[in-house]
Length: 94
Image (cartoon, rainbow, N blue to C red):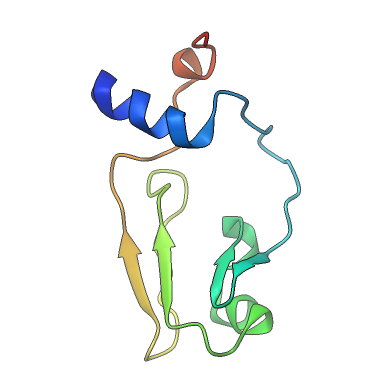
């Protein structure tokens, strides 16, 4: 990731990063938009348990989270380059 891109991402997300097992449960951020950790949606059954009407899953950590084939009608968008920051960048000062 370029320094400019990293800077833009960090402006949006901040520099404080949760630990690997931070325990966030799936949550509806705005109607129809959810945030979830991979292990909460790593199967069709788990995804449907959150909401059976989900039609799109966006994976921004493609290195750590392999793609999942969900049921027909659920699309998977893989966004490369936004993977969790490597350890040296986690320690970047503000």
